[in-house]
Length: 328
Ligand SMILES: [Zn+2]
Ligand SMILES: [Zn+2]
Image (cartoon, rainbow, N blue to C red; front, side):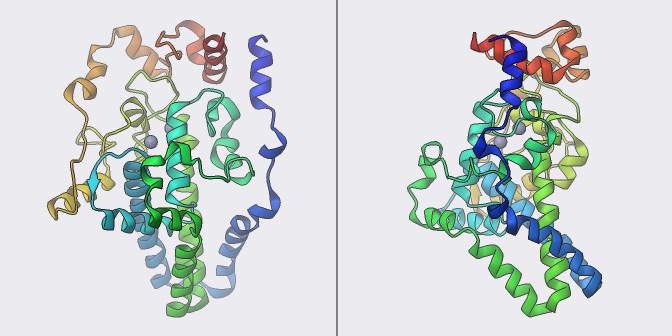
């Protein structure tokens, strides 16, 4: 198969990769419900709850689902592990085992054909939303998350992942009525979804590349602010097991600041941070390599070979060709 044929086969949708309208109804309805604010109005108190719930839940998601369950970048007790999972489940992004297993797969196959949500392979909308709205990835890949699947309380949470967000929604309704439900819960949940999804989509498209990786990951300060530190995605793909994703003082990473506070309170321990040889690896790059990084390139093929020349300016074609070359 030549490169073009491979590219086309990568872009074609399998039947189970088409949008599953029935199972997507709740996701779509939550978006529609946001317009309920036209009827309820928008109170300052509801806006404050919206902002508070957005950042609290985003922090729980990045610290819990991502840095702990996906990457084991720090240690904690079994009780706090459950609390982290419970808090992150209120984000309505399925259960901890489902989320972390799919994320581990993303790192194994970043931007290759097998990558579930690669904008380089399948385009922006697929990486942002398409893969979530189809049926293909509904199951939890327990083979990728055996280390945490042995805890029955996490398996329970993974199965009944809709219970925590529903409890939060009902509580807000009882406390503040329809206006609080719409703005406090639905608005913050939709913002939270798309904020999280930008890491799969925009963080592989916009931003600067500091390190050579086998994918198109980038560092983006704005996305880092919106996602409590997750926008330093090129750092993260270069060395994925660190509890911090902002590695320099100017790389704001609020989730890590929270982790440091939890460490002081002795709730978490063993926060992994990058060694100097990892952090400063880019200083050893050649002038040509640094220039290629500034242009968004310096993507390595699966064997670690550096791609050069015009391919550096055509990321989608480059990555697809890389995969084709690696598969031959
Ligand atoms: Zn990524
Ligand atoms: Zn990750």
